[in-house]
Image 1 (cartoon, rainbow, N blue to C red):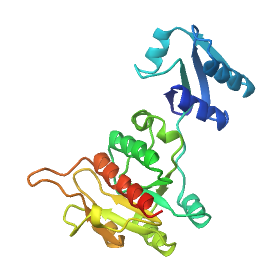
Image 2 (cartoon, rainbow, N blue to C red):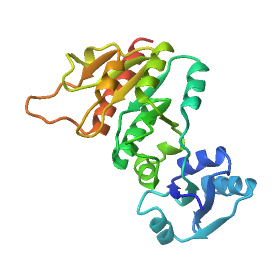
Image 3 (cartoon, one colour):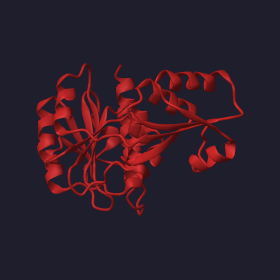
Image 4 (cartoon, rainbow, N blue to C red):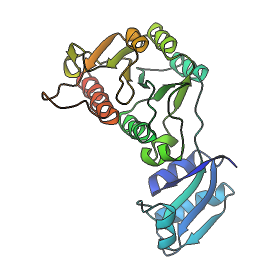
Amino acid sequence: MAESHTVYGLHAVTALLERGSDRIINVWLDDERSDAKLNEIKTNVEKLGLRYDSVNKKTLEKLASGGNHQGVVMMVKLPQELSEEALKKVVKQRQGDAFYLVLDQVTDPHNLGACMRTALAAGVQGVIVPKDNACRLNATVCKVASGAAEFLPVYRVTNLARTLGWLKTEGVWLSGAAGEAPKDVFSAELTGSVAIVMGAEGKGLRQLTKQQCDQLVKIPMVNGVESLNVSVATGVILFEVVRQNQVSL
């Protein structure tokens, strides 16, 4: 059986039901609730030919590991990672500006999940990771991502530097995060089609990755403060992209 994880909450479950039943394994619903939102979920589950179990709140809390389940928990197969060919197809067929997050050898599943959650909130269209020495989508990543892994594509590429070079030929401006960068992120140009390139925990960007970036940027910090966790730094930079593009409208 394929590896699975749990999704819970009205919004996340409703969104998954709208996408079809291919990955849904089981559904559990609060046996004490009969409000309109939960009844709508029941109807959609039945329309897809799926079964559900009516259980008490204690069971739901256990299934959701204490999370805010709102009366519904779903077990689903893990999302599939996508290929380099799939990335090239969507980039070439895009309408409007591209917005991607590139994670260079991020190996911690908690960091990957947190980055994905932030990326989805910022409107990122996909996360690009290298084939080797990088965390894969697993149950921990999906749990930390809090639903983002269900909707944000992850593209795993064989040669990251080569992929970055190709993105530049497609008009995507690459901005890499580096503590030694001469320019801070708040004075850098981050509008239009962009990809934000973040380095591994404690190591930063590899040299070949840096060389492909159009610019390197840093987050200004008070003297003596250590570098930020990659997921925190990712959030700062991604939402600076959001801010600049809103200002430019």
